[in-house]
Length: 378
Image 1 (spheres, helix red, strand yellow):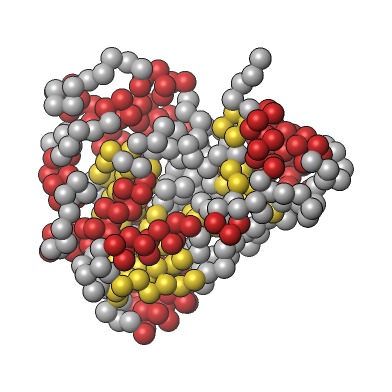
Image 2 (cartoon, one colour; image 1 turned 90 degrees about the vertical axis):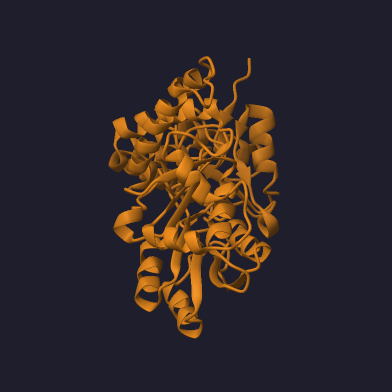
């Protein structure tokens, strides 16, 4: 008998209640029943984004919301400061280039968080910067960038828009859009929202909407002005992912029932236990100084090919985690603690990481990681 366990940083586990909702008879997306559902979901998702602004729901991966952010505010020749400290920071820069904007990149060592003063220095040098782009949680490196501090510097130094990739941050730790004055925040369904891939979310401040309204940038599917108009009426501009939206309502209800503060605290406990358990068996973290509570990245032990760890977990035990990306491929492995994960799940994962490391020849005190996790979680 074989079961599958999903501990990758997206897609994440989908709760049975959400799966059941998505298996219900499909609704026609132009029928009144769907409009009523969509209006409820559009209102409920504001709670997770911590905003009074409209949160648009798009049928795409999270990258679609990133592209929509760029396409609706950046014009050819506009300057954008981009924090590039991982694969997804690089994506912001690539998207800016595609739309003719000029990315001014702050290259941060993978595993490190950006110093907000670097953003301030570049703003001083480039006072005509239109927007600053960064990741609240850089999934590829398990780094948490200081979003509040960056936003504060931007507001003090310029009139630039603050654009935050919250794909593995929203619903994991506190990123209050309105309270912190963030102009654009994006996310995706397959992370802390506990859904399959296929939905992207984006919210704009009033300031950002004014910029979008003046934009002459060509765009069609990701025309947020068109989406704003349609979604205000309980519809989408184009065919939505109906079954995912049906599941989204249940997932949002689950988050609301638990309470955001409790959701954040649960992710904090999982992350702390994961990090401390890995250190208890002599492993080093990629991002020890600024870790994200969404995912933990761990250096593979010396002498062990890092790619073998997720491979053995998956092929032998049915446990899916993630390896490294780009130049970290084969050097690190990543364990997610996002979404529908409990303390019992984490202890199980940590125990099996011990088993695999032992089988691969790593010498350590067996049970030390599990004991540390139990100590912190129970």
